[in-house]
Image (cartoon, rainbow, N blue to C red; front, side):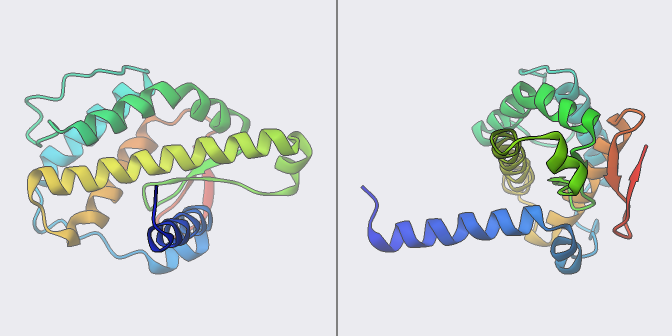
Length: 187
């Protein structure tokens, strides 16, 4: 059983995560410029591209050795596995134009009148849970890479940016994404 303080902190953190992940403007405002100085940039990009392609293909257990980046942790493997399981749901939301890739390495629902007209409350709740789960796994992946490779915390923005660029290359015609300057566009 959780103590009152632990429960309160957990609730505040969950609410904060939802607010930050769903508000593109706020996320863009507090985003830190990527700092690649402490990272092997080529290996990281190669790794990000490989992981995103495997997730996009729905491959739950990709070979994570020999990528130049240590990914051999339960946290990273689980994040990749659950993202691969969820990939069809994310792809469907992208196909319908309901979500877009944010320039900070997360995904967000495009809450507009067309989305509200095309969905009912139950569908919007389900979509929100899918997006929250996806963003949670993305954070686990980014933070897991920092921890597993002993990268400095300032490397987080560069890891997010690298995975963002890898995901943009996987998007299909008509999928939406946020440009580095914050505008939402289509591929």
